[in-house]
View 1: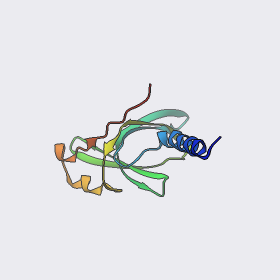
View 2 (view 1 turned 90 degrees about the vertical axis):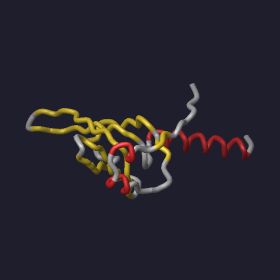
View 3 (view 1 turned 180 degrees about the vertical axis):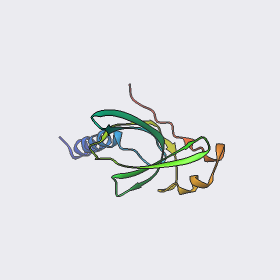
View 4 (view 1 turned 45 degrees about the vertical axis):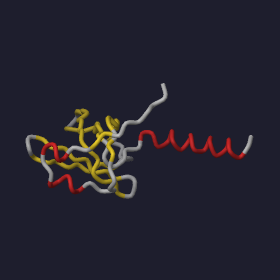
Length: 118
C-alpha cells in the first residue's frame, strides 16, 4: 500500500468521524432526557448553533414568538439522547453573536449545499 493510499484512508476516516459533529451555523435538533419525579421524557430543542466552546459546549439559538431563546448543551452529557443536523449554513465567523440583534429575514443564514454520495 502506497503512501498516497494511506493518506487517503486517513482522510476518509476523519471525514466519517466529523460527520455528526455540529458546526457553527448548523440547524440542529437536540433531544434531551428530562426526569420529572419518577417519569422520564424526551424534550426536543431545535435551533441554530451560534457558538462552540472548547469543542464540547454548544450554544443553540431559536426565536419563539419574537423572543430569542438560547440553550447551552454539552455534547458529551449523558442526558442528551440524540443530536440531528438538519441543515448546514455558509458562515464566515466562529461566533454568530450578531444574530442576537437581527430580527426576521435579516437573521437568516445562507444554505450550504453538500453533495452526498448515495
